Image 1: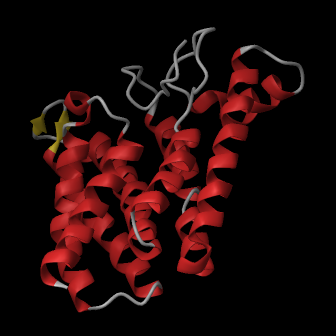
Image 2 (image 1 turned 180 degrees about the vertical axis):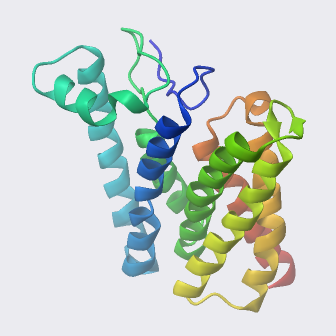
Length: 219
């Protein structure tokens, strides 16, 4: 039984298809926005909500694989062209969507809401920038990726972190430590293949860990 999504597959889609995929990726920014709006007091409720949405999303994708009437054609119409390859009959997760939902729940379990929201923003904005800039402008390669894409990850990831830290009332220390946290997350994204962990999980975990440790040592 294969629970892996398509994010780590080697299938290649057109640049236009990649843009559409990343626009869907960016639409998930509603998740950190909900985190900030709901606040720390509702962290457990949000965590349970994201976990439930993960299960529902996983069930829908399984129905797509099994070609269930109505569900499968509708899913294929909306998302089929964005998948890097046709999923195998044994797969449950075929896209990055359920991973993002699970990562939101996971981040809320591990970190304060302000850090969890910033961590998800880093993953969504940084990963999008790295993919689009790397494919279009990447010239200097490292580990199968590009320095240009990694630089875009740091710039846009930090911008996302700063924005959500501002929305949640972060202090000067948070803005200061967010930069090394984003750089560490960029390194994790760069070596995602070696880590063998879906980057929707590893990026928020890396960013959040540095932020929390920085607060412990310098807060």
